[in-house]
Length: 198
Image 1: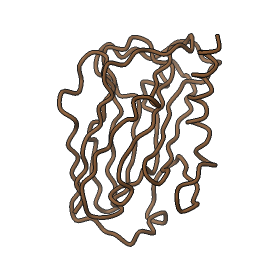
Image 2 (image 1 turned 30 degrees about the vertical axis):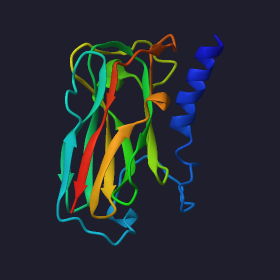
Image 3 (image 1 turned 135 degrees about the horizontal axis):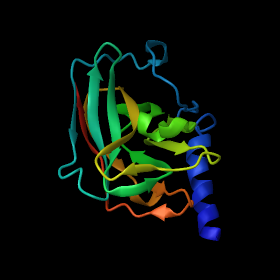
Image 4 (image 1 turned 180 degrees about the vertical axis):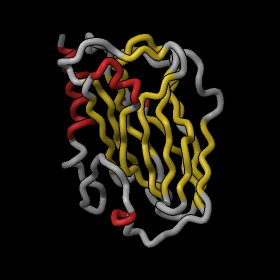
């Protein structure tokens, strides 16, 4: 039982600290959507490319996949996907990247997470040299998401902060999938990718 409580607290800490988390500049992170008003970097990208880690999409994987690049807002939107994981009640993780190239702006749960009318908690926060995100069905809701086939669990939006190249990598030790019994579900590989900004 102690392990289950620890995992629940870890998931909740990732998801609910977003408003109060501080990055190295002392600014709070948060969920929601990125807007031009939030961009105080003064940097305008002319190109943003994302290359996913090779081999993503096998059974047991959680990976990032490109959805779209929007140069008007200086952002890149990535899908968080899973395959071969039969029961997903919540998924949360820590990402590592160079904040001089990108910063995590927001996280939104996919339609799959709210299947059956379930309420979903979601968010993301930049922490200076990386970020944290989480998606979970509310505990009062029954059921889980089945990702037997490739299933989008949520989306993450990053803002380009400067020219360069950075890997966006999951911290395996601080990234978790929980089932509806609040037990950890084994993930074979957490796969990120590389962003190049010009």
